[in-house]
Amino acid sequence: MNIVLFGPPGAGKGTQAELLVKEHGIVQLSTGDMLRAAVSEGTELGKQAKTVMDAGQLVADELMIGIISDRVDQADCTNGFILDGFPRTVAQAEGLDVMLQEKGLKLDSTIEIVVDEQILFGRIEQRAKETPESERRADDNAETLKKRLAVYHEQTAPVLPYYEKKGNLHKVDGMQSITEVANQIAGFLK
Ligand code: AP5
Image 1 (spheres, rainbow, N blue to C red):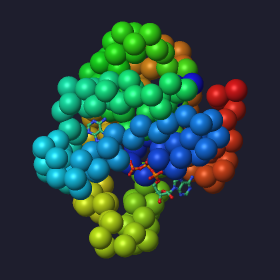
Image 2: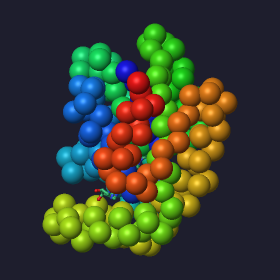
Image 3: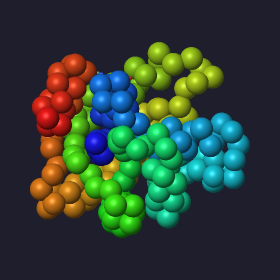
Image 4: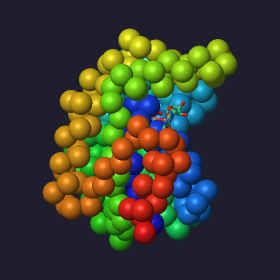
């Protein structure tokens, strides 16, 4: 089972992906986590990505498509994967289609988690408060969140009609409890 989770920053993509991993034994492919790992390891990718991420902007499409393509080839993705944070632009969605076709794979479900903006600010503020200083994300502050949201509306929201036209985009009310959101997603995946 191959799934894409869409949603603005703080919508709950990572939270729901972790639950799906436990439920279905498939792999979470979070591009944000991959980039943060590269930043903390100080790799060349990490050095390039850090400035972009701290500014709330997006890392280059070709880089991200390459990272996902390599990752999907790894053995642990055989049973399926959840794309969390990818694709984030129409170019990434098109690149993903080409990549999946070349690998003989397909997406089974694309899910958008819908949450009002003022709730997102509350969630990100809360996450920043609860995270120890050393582990706090540099982009988890109100000023950068505004930029991340603007980027989401400009560059990621246009990806949704791309999948709507294919007829397999499901919308989930992400303002319910974590369990209720998970149950709604489970309903779509049946
Ligand atoms: P990324 O790490 O993907 O961040 P994001 O999309 O901004 O999403 P978040 O991780 O902040 O939120 P989430 O939706 O996963 O919510 P979560 O479950 O954590 O990307 C970071 C950066 O990397 C980007 O800005 C960009 O620079 C770069 N990048 C990444 N992918 C890229 C790509 N493909 N192309 C180019 N650049 C890329 O939940 C948030 C909080 O809310 C948590 O505290 C959680 O406990 C809580 N919560 C979750 N659900 C609920 C609920 N139902 N009720 C109450 N609280 C809830």
